[in-house]
Length: 265
Image 1 (cartoon, one colour):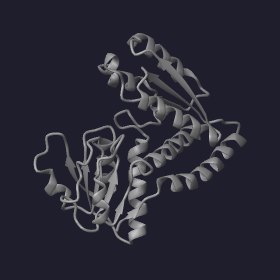
Image 2: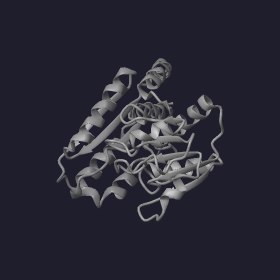
Image 3: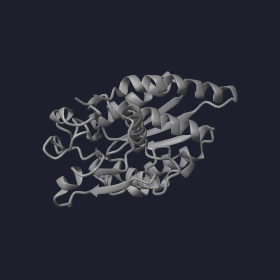
Image 4: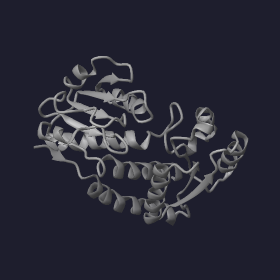
C-alpha cells in the first residue's frame, strides 16, 4: 500500500516557518503585499482566490483582490496592471487563471505586462520565480525520495505543455532528471508512464492514470483539478501518491507565499 501524502499537515508546518519569515521582513518595515486580479465569476477561481487571501493574511501578508467584469476591455485591465506595477509597496501581481473566453485571447499580453520582479506566480516566460504548483511538485518529489530512501532519475509529465507542466519540465531537466513529456497529441503514452520512476499528471482528465499503466513502487503526483487525474486504485500498486484534494494544493499556496517573500526581501 502506498504512502498517502498529507499536504494539509505538511503545509501547516511550512506555515509556521513562513510566519517567521514575514516577521523578519516586518522588523525591517516591509509588509509583503500581493494583488490578485480576477476577471469574471468562475466559481473555482473565486474559491482559489479566497483561499489564497485567507492563507496570506494568516501568515501576516496582505492580499488585495481586484474583481473585474468578464467584459472588461484590454485597455482597462492594462491600466490596472500598469498602476500596480508602479506601486512600490506591492511585491506581487497575479492574474487568476483560467480567464473567461471574452479575454482569453489577451492572456499572454496581459501576463507580459506584469513587472518581472512582481511575477510571483511565475507565469512569464523565463520568470525568475518557479510557478508555485510546479515548485510544490518538485518539493513533494524530494520529500518522497527522502521517505522512500530512493533517487528519482526519470519522470513522466502528463500535460507537459500546460501551465504547470511546462515550467515543471524545465525545472526537472535543470535538476538533471530525464523527463518524458506527454502532451495532448502523444500516442501510446501508456508506455512512457509505465517506464519511469515518477509520474506527474496535470491534465484535469479524471482517471487518465489507471492501475493498468503504472508500475510497482512508482511515485505518483496528481495535479489534476478539480477531481484528480489518478484512479484511487493506483494506490494499491505504487509506493507514494498525492491525493486530490489535500495533496499538492495546500503546498502550492505555501510556495506562492515563499515567492512573495523572496520578492519582498
